[in-house]
Image (cartoon, rainbow, N blue to C red; front, top):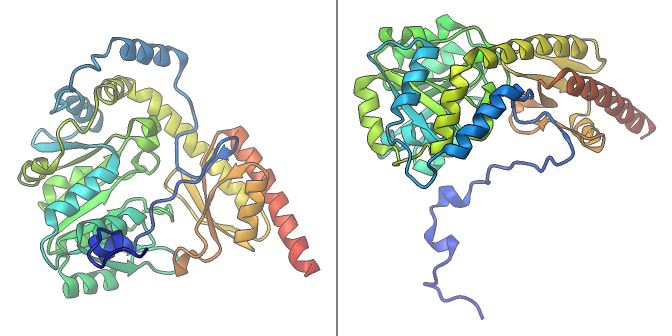
Length: 370
């Protein structure tokens, strides 16, 4: 029996923007060499793991966490060197902060502007919150197209601009001078998403005082805390005091606060691992440069974007050989034949290179035979 015309169905009740979306897909990775999600592949030292185990045993999980996370915020200030007049807002990962920003600025007709290709959550969260999304294509080499950005800002007057620095999925740092021009010309708020700051050697944190409309966002996920889901936003008090009103109570749990604070007390350990990942990245990039039918792009992050002959077939071949990376072919015209690999441990990187060479060889044989 067909439903009545006024029946409660998704098609009738949900916003069209939601119906048109595809859920963020996370592929299963059990038993695979997992190089698809930009995680830190190195475990914590045993002594630090024991310290965290004691914390978990003693944590008052029957009580709500400190709603203001005051101790953790002070630790973040200490390790990042934030000025005392810069406020800090914590999120359950950076995704929550992106959504909070969009919610705050989603007046009727307001636009959220970002470059493309970039982090997919900018576009998705614009749809979640009812903002118009304006995507400005990057240049052929994934550099900022500054004239196009300035023109788009003049025409669309975005309330919110997101720039990933370095960019995901391309891995490059945009020209700092071009970024400064964008901040100065923006009619609204500009957020620099520095998720990969630990691998980049460049940051806009020291420039917060120069630009009243600038905020900087970071996540600790890439530094080794992906399982904790912790990010922070920082900038001028006039912005953060207003944005704090939208933060849901107790959004960062007891264990996340205590474990993150402990890890930041051992920030040097995490930075040593980041330094090792940068060395591993250099090794991996060199191997990709030396691989036929592969073109890697320079990276300031903990992953490498590369073009490969018959990318879809190569991606499938890697999966068959137990290595999971990210297939970006078809995601955007600039990403044709592109794959993205997270930098793993030396053993994981070696296994990836061998599997890639085997997959490329199989792809060549298959297409030559056809």
